[in-house]
Image 1 (tube, helix red, strand yellow):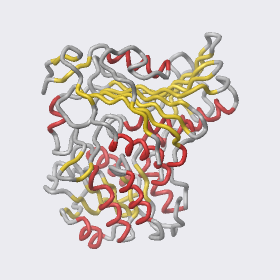
Image 2 (tube, rainbow, N blue to C red):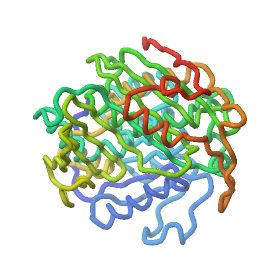
Image 3 (cartoon, rainbow, N blue to C red):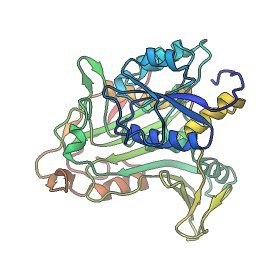
Image 4 (cartoon, rainbow, N blue to C red):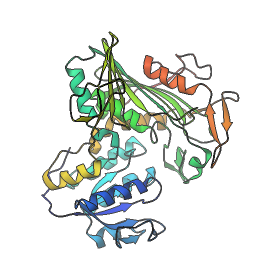
Length: 406
């Protein structure tokens, strides 16, 4: 639910918590919006202050490792939280206590209990919380919705998602919580489905219109790891939604070659493929035809490469929400279905280590990485057939663990 907000004039003061690593992308975006006159960076919360070079073009925002104090002293209206997963709830509620609205990195929280605590804490405080699933700002989503409603691919049969990325050993050494299920007794749940390729899950759920907690009827999981970590790096998820849609998501960080992740809506007379990082859509009909299925604002040509749609930035959307009441694109309550999946992963069996011979080490420029043999084709086949790894005949994959959400 979006809270009513008072109109705001002039650039809104912003504090960024977590400005290194992925936080650098937020710093770049804040600089863009500052140049557009929409926001003003007034504070940075980091354990080690940023250098003048890192803050080029920003003037001198206050820096501190005291988040609450920083909010008080700067008069911030918005806090962008790009901090470790297990700090999300606490920091978002600190911001709410100070009347500060938040753009909160995904996943929303590391457990469903923490998610409920977050929602309860936000209720009645009059502050907004937008969750950073950037793909859900894509205008392609509405275009695909119109195509489906108009019967462009017939009756929807299911939705499949695939993500094949590469991450080296250094990726898991960059921060203490990387690849962990817990840290110092606190849930983290930093696996491939819940963090790096979480957008594949969230985008598939949005395309089905199944985003709230009550929209999930059944969850099946096949989780594995080639790397020496606690969490999963190669996994397959299958969900049955309350409306009866079957959704599969097959993802890996141990790909043979890095590829663009995508979501496929399967219909009785064709399919729609959405490469969500590129905002690119391709409609393929059962008769062999292909078109862009523009259905909205686009640029690019209507050919087999598809059509590229626009995208609304989530921080820009939050600013518009505070200025004129524009509806939030990813308010926290609309991530409930995703959080059901996070909880199933958190409480499910530990990811199974892949046996020797199923993966190999490939030397890298900065660090070596582990590659699962044949995983690229397996991930694509899952999205194409809505099947799990075990159903596709992977000899290392056990049948899925079935979870019934409460």
